[in-house]
Length: 444
Ligand SMILES: [Zn+2]
Image (tube, rainbow, N blue to C red):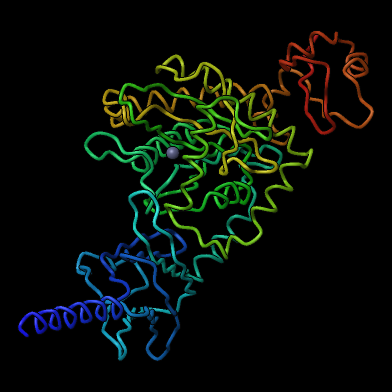
């Protein structure tokens, strides 16, 4: 009899456990907040996937997030709300075991929410983005203005993209040194170096610790009328001995090496870690595929390889190189149709001595100067039409923009110079020229 009673109470207990597990399908275990110039991102860590609903209430402005069968077990007092649209975060249980999170707002926002699946050491997450309407319109108006110092002498614009950010730390080095932190410092240093040079203007794609989806980064460069897009990274590998910098361009036909292929898939995971709303992304993937088969991209890919080689060459003078040639692979962040783009791995953050270097201002300055030297060598040779650099170069010779039907020999004849001298002045390896391409015509 006694044995039966024990089993019964055991069954009863088991049932109770099952019921409470059913009741609380998920627990909110952490909350983080990231502030970017045009939005605020709240990330809720969950111990499993959960259904949620998001809606706005006004008078006063509030945002309500209902999570099915969930409970809240996270600290909120460390959230830095001062510079955000959120006044206060509250939560409470609802009838039926649902969890209600309420954000009291300082002003109206455009909210978006989406779930992020568990990946690597990141748990299931719920992302709530609060877009600041006002700032977005100001930004887009500003972006419409072309960068011009003087009429016909515009600056060459370099968009510098510090990889990762926010939820996505990138590679992690000794002493929890994050790639996202180091590369932002390199990017800012490079921007300063560029802005000191007449005829150049740097634009930072990421200015702080927040995540930008990969496809948005070249979009920002295009909106700023960039002539070049440079994505800055630091490598990571299981073996701490791996070392050296490398430069990459986009490849349409597979990767140039196994190493490049592995690196591209690692870098492309950034969206899954950093957080991208797949619905908002929509048919972007399809659009990118179309862009990639567009022939207009060929010239920007050649330009990318040209600038990449020059940057790698200069970097080789100040740091060890992981690969002596520019490698190519399918990097999502480089899929820009018309802006030449390169990805620079500044070294291995997982290598103790390179991590130390990357963490030092002196080394970062050396790296930035080398990267700029490579960029400058490229633009001195091929200054964009209407730029200050082109105007300066014109003083030393003549520029000629190739029209339909032109050949190198017809241009040489017209200016009474040799084909070889034009090739030399423009560092052309073949006689192939393209409509719209600007050639420097050497003086006799
Ligand atoms: Zn990276």
